[in-house]
Image (tube, rainbow, N blue to C red; front, side, top):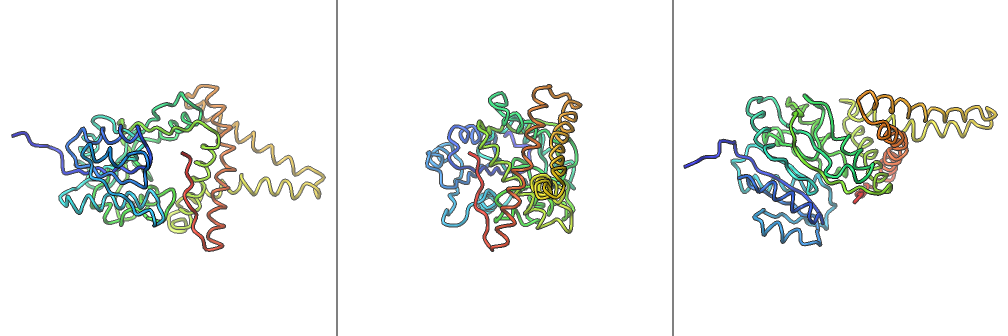
Length: 331
């Protein structure tokens, strides 16, 4: 009788109203022999029925409690281990992603050969980068350096022992939950590694400026909250938060407040923005990016500092008044 040479692995997918994207996601996971748990957060599009029809184990979140992707992943992996305690590795996947053939085999082979590694991820690619500049920027964002890393994204394979030692995701985070978890995993002595291998196709479906802005605001919120949690001990997201607040609030505020006392000379500070754009453009061109794409991306990187600052200030305002921020969604 043929046996599966791979160690026991379980897969956890999360989603809400992902429709066709979820169908691709679950089919890509179920094409292997691993058990699949799908965690649904109040879908109205038949996602639960579809997941059950293809053989996934479905966990439906209690939506009377505050929802976060972190909470969904936690409930998913804990339900999986309760039903399959022999599981040693966990593949997480967002419902808008499709797993690349051969990825799990590649990831597990690496993890088996490197016991100190707690998390591995690969190359996430955008499914339709040609549909918008926002999708193309996502595809570029996913292209992080190969080798040991500080963090992974939502799609990754975790060693069970590393995940349990860190206590899983932080339920309360509305964004940035993967980097925050990786801080704790690395503090426990495990490494995070990105492999030079195809991992997933992601469908951002980001076609409008308003979607990009909300997504970038969410990133700023993640920076500020992550820095508050781990900044003093590890420097986690401290630089990103300071940079967003400096460009998004400090520079324009000083330039405008000092305009009268300096007879308008302080307004020259706004020249720093095109200079920042030029620096980003030059860097992108040095990496071989096409001229038009490099120019547009550089402009959005500069503009994005204002959105990130908005997200950071939203977090700080919430802390000041004792209220947690709600989800910041772009789809």
